[in-house]
Image (cartoon, rainbow, N blue to C red):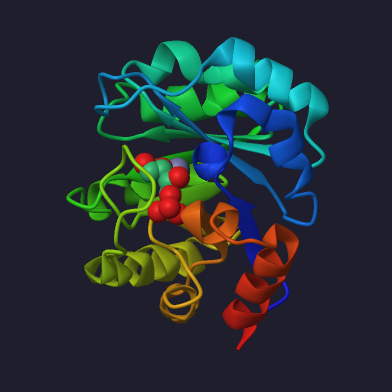
Length: 218
Ligand code: DX5
Ligand code: ZN
């Protein structure tokens, strides 16, 4: 599995020391940044000015997951601020294709995300517009929740559609991904793994990233 990638979520990091916390994941492929607006989800984290500052100091590219209303208006700005991948939710967007194109026009990878209750089929036609599909494996809003194994059918469905479609579209899972659950995600066809508490909850963060990688390759 040469293409498996780990994207640690800084939601579980020490928000008082974000530059240092990014330094601890320099062996990862991405840094997953959860942007929450207290409207799309009942939690509030950080926004554009902070992402811009993180992009200046991060040793790894930023993978921005926008859990916000009106991503049509805001998503391209995150790419402009330096995020190398920008993910918006289909439940919040009005013009998904237009938003994805605007993200790509800023030079970033574009992705759409599906909450656990949202089916994939109505959005399959968007595949030509994106570089990744995010299948949420918890209800978005908080770290440290338990993995929703019933989402593996959706991961399989997305992987099959991506295969049919051709090209190189990544399939990301986010929520409850751990040493115990990452194998099932690989088996279902995911290739980008977001992990918050499983990475930052470890005493030795680089060792945990290594361990998640080797567990994914088993
Ligand atoms: C949840 C966020 C996740 C969160 C995952 O809404 O999108 O990225 O940080 O945290 P864990 O890995 O602890 O479930
Ligand atoms: Zn996330």
